[in-house]
Amino acid sequence: MLSRDIRLKTPRLTLRPTEAGDAQRMAQIQSNWKVTRMLRLAPWPATEAAMAAWADLHGKEWAAGTAYRFAVLLDGVMIGAADIDDIKGDEGEIGYWFDEPYWGQGFAREAAAALMDFAIQTVKLRRIVAGHNAENPASGAVLKRLGFHFVGDTLKFSKPQGAEVPYRMYAYEA
Figure 1 (cartoon, helix red, strand yellow):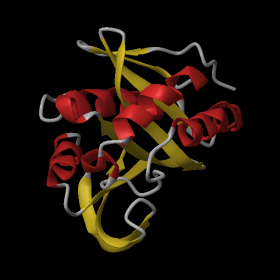
Figure 2 (cartoon, rainbow, N blue to C red):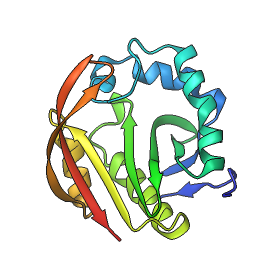
Figure 3 (cartoon, rainbow, N blue to C red):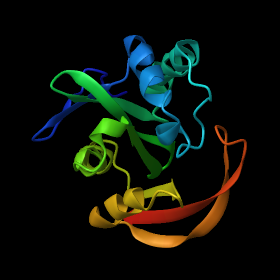
């Protein structure tokens, strides 16, 4: 089992395992519809109770090796989250979301690159998949810059939107 004392460092960011105390900030970020509408499984409206319930599962997932979820910090302030989840064998799925004021500044690429290194070097994943709402091409651009290749379009259910939405899927082979 991997220690939850892990910290991933980039030139500007620190990624640390999420904790119960992050629920308030997670709810604050996801209270912005522009953020949450791009996510598949986020509750809407976002509440601190829902985020606390979600964060409560993270330690169990970490211990089981099925997901590693990180708070992304800039100067000690949580600006988003990044994770590797749905881990089965040597494959997992990467995801990330950020508070709107931090969009377009390279934070998603920086955090995702650190998370990919962790997934490949520490978790020993050989294949990483990712997807994004088709209405969010910026996320696709991040994935392409990280070396992901496009594998196809699909429909996925969006909990916040309450409907299936077009999704673009990518893969990375380590």
